[in-house]
Image 1 (cartoon, rainbow, N blue to C red):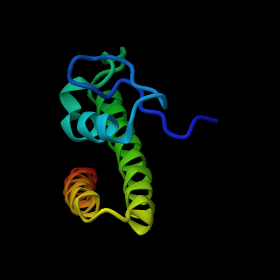
Image 2: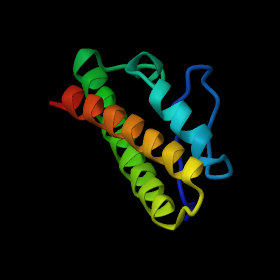
Image 3: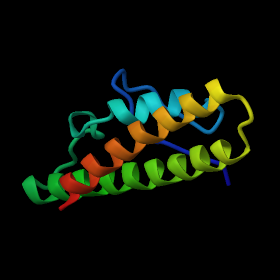
Length: 105
């Protein structure tokens, strides 16, 4: 199982996989919006809402995993500059997570 996998979650619609760095994943995850859902399948508005919710839940899972990784990395960071960068990244991830959770509700 890959460490982290994002499917169809970037503005330029590239597939993103576990081989990318967490910085790139964070950037792509934070730029992900429902406008970039996979193409709507036949079935109308109800199916669209299900797809939207599934995409938001997938993004929430991704962000929770990313946040956990960032917090673990911060625990072992020795360099003060690296710690500041990680703290900033964690705040950004937390803000993205809060936005996704509000959209899910």
